[in-house]
Length: 69
Image (cartoon, rainbow, N blue to C red; front, side, top):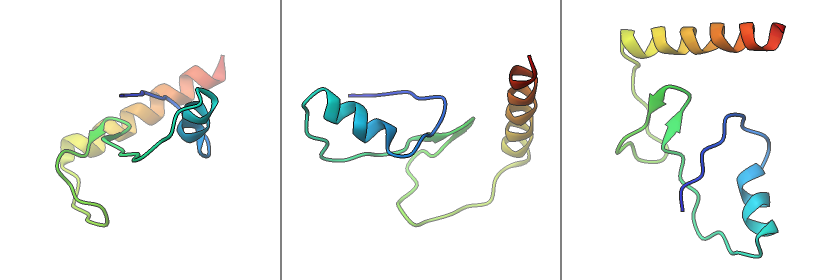
């Protein structure tokens, strides 16, 4: 099952699955905002590319304008 959320509230996916009376065996984050994690293993890190950094700043600016209205 794939679930997309736009705001990371504490344990929201686990609670949604529990509400459906289903058992969650594994939860894997595949993307963080505009950054796709790909085959990155848990606990690993990497430097962001210039394009990724710009996309994060862009996402922040979009979020600010949505929250102002």
